Length: 339
Image (cartoon, rainbow, N blue to C red):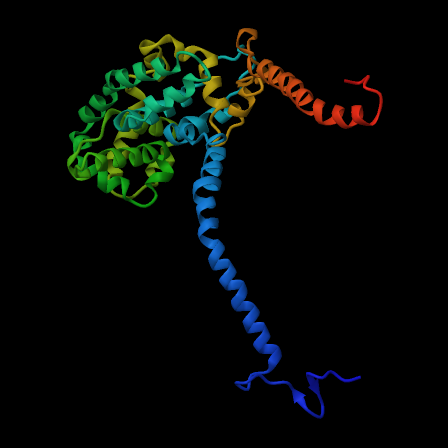
């Protein structure tokens, strides 16, 4: 039996305009679907914008924790080599304090250290006041001794144009990695003030990182550098061993002795990830600590108790609500003993 719409004798059936009937039907169906979608689209967009999007945003906020890694990125990286052992760990090395020094020097300029303190204060009481206090004291550290010693060695070190030319030279980041990293922070600080980089003398944290780099690098690496400021660097490299060294760890402890507390550093490390489960853990009376996931103190365990009470009352109300609809037909069909 042949297909009436496409038989060899008659060919495909055509619509009034000469288009094959099957194709015309497909076009008509497509138009109907598009028309239906157009009718639903406003409501769909309304639901997405007013309902789905806010829920998705709140769910993202419940795990988002980028403020730590964005505010003190160098410190987060430096702490990867430090282990917290149930409060028995010693304070981290001077490398971590050096990283924190540069991070907070920039954060204090942008006033982001206060937001960081507020975030970490949810986890360890006192972090907010500690970071605010450190922000006020970061500019009063004795690291200006490095600045004075470099300038006494060669007055060119206080010339901003010399710094700009040197830090733009190829290969300088390889022999002065910490200085190059700190220089990026200095560029952002100057740009935020709408100043000219070649007219602003670098702050003390730049000279401090320069000292650390020259002490850490072998003389051969500095001697191999031939870019802008090569002679100054080589002279400084020969002289830094005689410079007065400033312990950044002691400088932080002079501001507040809490910087020697492993719990403080453990909190920073525990919440250094861009995403955290800490908020969800709190909802079930748990907490994320430097030592891992632990139960909240007994006097703070309230959510599971409330959840249990809510479930109990829900079951009581549900049982009370469905008792009559179940009992009524049962009593009507038999002896009235169940009511």
